[in-house]
Image (cartoon, rainbow, N blue to C red; front, side):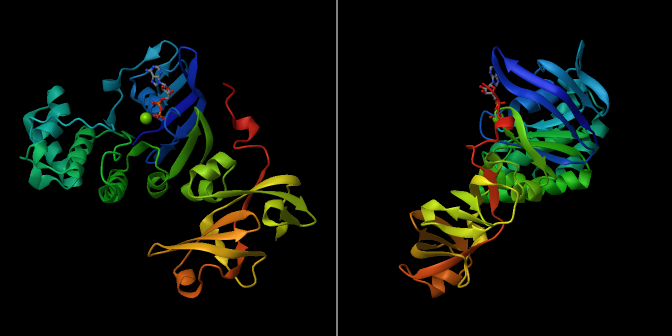
Length: 357
Ligand SMILES: Nc1ncnc2c1ncn2[C@@H]1O[C@H](COP(=O)(O)OP(=O)(O)O)[C@@H](O)[C@H]1O
Ligand SMILES: [Mg+2]
């Protein structure tokens, strides 16, 4: 197990600042995900933790020991970290056993010890019976597990994973998520996982750090940031969401583009607002406050994906099989809305959270 402490880490390449004032602590045994759009600085952060990149300013501690900062710089091989990157390179000419043994062979570990450790990790990643195979005799998922086993063989307290599943097909990606999570729980190691895939982040993480343009927008459990996003960027990045412009008036929010229809509101905001609603939180409800016409419905098996015209606005509704069986296009319907998120009407990001570039 290992803690990771980042203190005021900033990283610039020339005059391009890609990480700004990153100050966070990852606890022993936590599954941490750095989530954000491409180019937001996730890989750079991971490379700083690994020791492949020096931060421009700030300090980094692993297990309470300064590894980067001031005049101190501990090289990657001395940091006790396991790593798997997106383009996981397994040696094509080495069988599974030798691939996994490689880091121990480099360290000149005694043969008997290598045997024991490799068998241990092959068991963990369910590859025991493939030890003698060459990588080209394995599926993509199995090759990825070889890379994972190799990262785990030296028993690191900290494992860094950079988009390790992005080269796998959708089904395999889903099952590997649970495998990685199981391995992490079983070994009790700290994992820092990088992905741009919000579903992956939601499924695996104890805590997510959602990053935009080098700044953490919000951190918290998946449930916290999904249901209580601090700004519109977060709401939009995690899950499906639609934004509607409205204005707070006498205990309701009035939507001009919905023909002046309104939702009840007793929150703190006043004046013009932006209301974010997840389509699964809008329901067909004969008593609902909004009225519209069902324009389209798409049957997706587990859910129906519907479009309802409310005034000039097309509202997306994702609902259980109910609608498909009972409603048809052109029907007049009423909608109720739950868990709406009300933001100030100030563009995509709260001003204070934006990087000035
Ligand atoms: N070695 C480098 N030299 C110059 N710019 C870099 C270097 N590495 C990354 N960058 C820049 O830093 C930014 C963040 O990159 P990266 O950390 O790879 O993002 P992510 O992993 O979130 O997609 C990008 O604008 C990228 O071009
Ligand atoms: Mg990256």
